[in-house]
Length: 319
Image (spheres, helix red, strand yellow):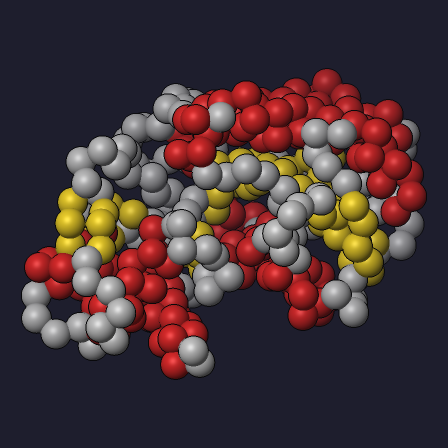
């Protein structure tokens, strides 16, 4: 079988993964869904090097057609609805995309991959651990606290079932927070860093956040996709992917404001919204990934903050 890779999705993670696969001389196919907005922005620089396909995780027929047509040797399912707040308002949509979509993919593989040679990487979320004490690992009991996390937990268990009962080569990456300049401002670090730059330039006055003493473990998305790539080079299994380093949100705010050149006490610019839901500390030592994948991240949340501040400074200067 040719070294043909199929990536489902076209967001931050898919873009970095495609770059890694292309560097490894893989033939890359990418599925994206129909949208009224530009959902190819993060992969636009790769469009002359990948083959695009239209499809949708919630449409079993389109997945079946895609697998039969492309005949990939590896599949990376990076398509998802990953906004926790959105899932609280649209739980059935999250269930359709995040759980049922994975069920569609697994069943499509079961029906087409007769010799069990196709390998699937399925990312799930550390949010399915809920408030479990840190550090978590691959055996930590699941205790999801949102429709999104519940759907991810279901997808995780389903992957284990298809691996055990049907012999599918499925590996799950239990993904902790990861970010990059390709992440939208709806996420914590981009929101902090973009606001820091705008406040420093006099374009914004305040930044609204939740619990400032909340500890967060956030890594660099490209490094996490390198781990995703390596999971399909070993026996199918589950791997926690994190940096193992946690920082209070207040520290990351001060770090971003200092790098951006904000004058005065950064806390004078912060408004706390108690309606933001607090969560436990999600962090993992990732011993299994270190040992079996030979994977060690070089960037922690401090490094990602610097990366993002520089990105938003260039963006503002270009206006």
